[in-house]
Image 1 (cartoon, rainbow, N blue to C red):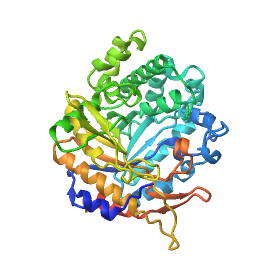
Image 2: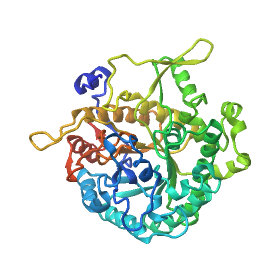
Image 3: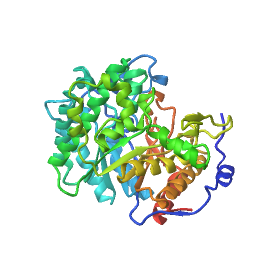
Image 4: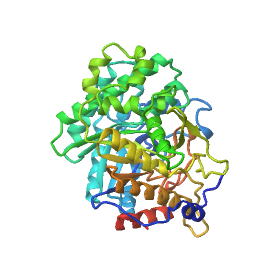
Length: 467
């Protein structure tokens, strides 16, 4: 495996420059409920598809689960103080739907609402702005047993949940994200079956469910708007394919942009199939030609709801794909060199991905953007001096943030950045084997240790610049 050498990498590609960000740029970190909360069976919480999936023998390495994870449910006050120590201006967290509606619908669990209300109060007391995500993969098992996203009724169930959360938190939470990474939870969970709930759907089933997820986003936007005031901002968080030009040549830039929004055979990672309906009000033409026959009845009329106005778009970017122009106007993927730097998760280090994704999305959609996730898994451990030294992560952040700053300087409308993640946590199908956090978590003792990267990030936030 290639090694990410910070000094050589930064110097070779010019990522050791200083970079100042706009005055009101938002610096934060992100987490998700199932990955950090624990307390899976406490205080009235219902089962989610991940609670069930983790019981499947062999599904997760070492039999890991999120039943305890970082035990954030019992440590949230201390975790907020860690956020304050890092200097975070904002914190993006997700709400466990099953903690609010144990069966997905019906009876409300007020203990669950009380937990998130206390978390929000703690954040505000620390001067940290909450960004609440309504759905980050942990579908209530009761919803799944009724057909999950294959059911058109899922849009109504999700809207009811969104309304309840806005009603109880909307006086203090002014930034809402409806759904996180539908491409991932549908592809890995219901096509490949390596994530919860472990299904293997047909192409028709996938496209039907994908449409219902988009419709659920739209009904949730309506529900949040109806229960909130004019200060409330609503968006969504998407991850797709980050295409970067193989060279600065105009032809390669045009090819990378075309590849970014093309709809091909890997629909799960298509940007335009997911974002065009929300932001432009229609499915892309090449996608309709290929997949339109699988859309459910009434899909065209649903676009009016899916296209409910949003205030921002979040995008999650970790790596990228190199694209070169082909003769005749096409494009092709260019493989990385064998010794190209990778993270501990074996993902390619591609700082340009933040630059070009920001640029291309701004040019197509003309909407404020937030980087709602970006970071790297690293082989972190506590040193003999009691500290966690992670120069690789610092180099990663410096390189990616430098290119993000370049994009902003070149006109990309990026308003903020949320590092993934605040804490080392349960990394889905990888269990506890991957560490993404600014904070090291000893899962046996729940002891937290700020990594060197947390201190570096604090200085970035204080100065509003990369140094």
